[in-house]
Image (tube, rainbow, N blue to C red; front, top):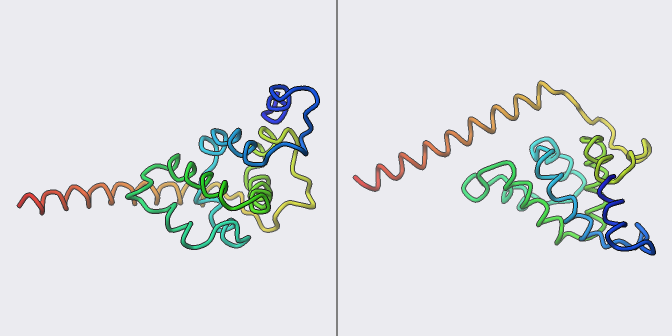
Length: 154
């Protein structure tokens, strides 16, 4: 049973998916988003479709505030909650284009081809490279913090 069907069941038989509150839907999908997607893979699309702005992106990528990928994605969901239904729908298009399996598991259907974003690169090598670079950046930031503490202690 997909998550939308589960929500319909919990809301009663008279419930209609179209009447579902988009914020409730987003909250329901939070764990799927946090556990199964990579922010770095969708960030350019989120920026280019104006789902988030540069300030949001910088905030999400701040290694001092959001140290893990899960923390970044949780913050993305929080930002989406404030951005409105139109931006949520854009996010779903991006999700369906970059992560069709996650979209299908959460929405219970595939994103129609006519709504998919063109030029989506599913290049696993570049995803792996980005992951390695993000891990290296995290390690360097941790080392930087240790060095700063040592300097302060004298």
